[in-house]
Image 1 (cartoon, rainbow, N blue to C red):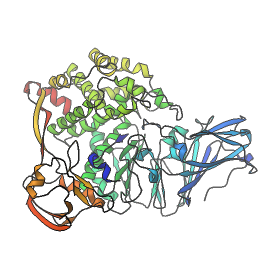
Image 2 (cartoon, helix red, strand yellow):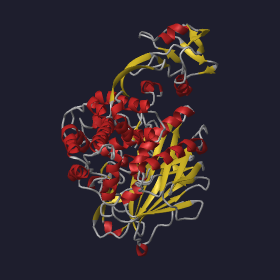
Image 3 (cartoon, rainbow, N blue to C red):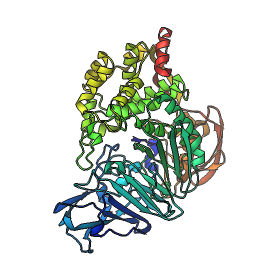
Image 4 (cartoon, rainbow, N blue to C red):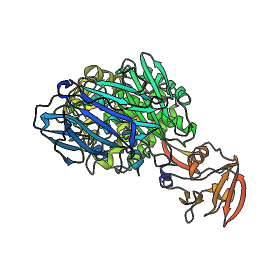
Length: 617
């Protein structure tokens, strides 16, 4: 999973089912029928037909937590009016035990369970940030134009049937296409059938139904499908695909022999920020796919950059935890989860790879790579740097560990970098962390999990004793990592530089706000403003109505932010404003704010060969 905060300083601105079986037709599969043709009060009906039940009392469970989210979301809260029936249509006694569990009595007679599913997108207030909502890429949408079927939000499991095979049947309008990594076994244009070996496999395969807008291509022997839902038609799959294809080709080349899937689906849902829609931006990984949610208003150039980083992160999850994972993940308990202590690997190494492959394959420069790692050090520094990472990982669903989760993308990636540096140094540049992950993939793989407490010993046996010392001191222990020492091993030292900032916000706060009633953009009064404002003549409380001939307000604020990222020092600029009710036009030149930041640069040429092996080997 990867959560992103887009212009975080501006967050406050955006404010026909198949016939039921008879008792003589009990299937060897748990059969699930979802009817997308009939939407009632923004809900759809689900019918579940169990295999033979030999118990008097069973429970039907909707997940509390699903793999990759590392949060308690209680998807059962979105299930309504659950009922159970025998083969003659007589209702059985059902008792709701908690948000996610229903107890069914006289269960030997059970023929079917029915319920209505409400979606999560139109109920979001925070998009999953801060733990208040389901994270949008793990959520659901029910709309005639787009159904986001994250299957864990629609389908549950019986207490004794989690390992039964599942048959999912979805009735849908003929004009909608269900994009997924699964294979549709029904040739009809109005119904799809998917089969999985167990419930965990079903949950691992999302489906997005939209009017067809998708592309397909091959990367070596892997089939890729990219499906896009853009409610106002701003983006098409054909627009997004070229960069995705270039990136995935580079990723496969970087990964080498690791190949854990033959088909991969990227499901991209673009949220309409002018409506009550998804607000949690980022992505959620699955074994053979990823679900992505982004704001449709984002400028195209920035969309390409964000998707490159987000999708590359999720794609690398085919290595871990999808290929290399602990028993806690392989036999995941959806309603009483026990978490693995190796988030440093599942999310950290994945995030490190998402950056390393770009320098390795020539997509970014060496300086840009150092800049990215420097930013991760800066962001990790505001977290609890003495909390043992394994302890945080194993207890991530609870406080105070839960609040430290986002550090998996910062310190977790830096742990991966430091391990890579140790292995490179010890092997004279011949091996790195990718070599380690390839060996672990061969040792374990999708169907063979490892024991959580044995992973470190396995890694040490495949690498060097210094790796064990690093784990004990910096991953299992409370000692902050001395990053300068690790960079120094590669001939890289600290350096300060000035970088251009954005004229509308800095890392601490924004300089503009929005009136939610009028949607007008206002220069915030009572705070120090950068030279950009005085150079043009902008004053506190001025209302910005247009810049360089383009009108702006809340509806297209992302365009303003995105376009300002491309402004250069001394560019000519024209700004239309309203000041005390009077319209005015200001002219001047762009004066960008600059921030002095601590970074890194290569300074020791005696270590160039080792450094090149690290970054480009």
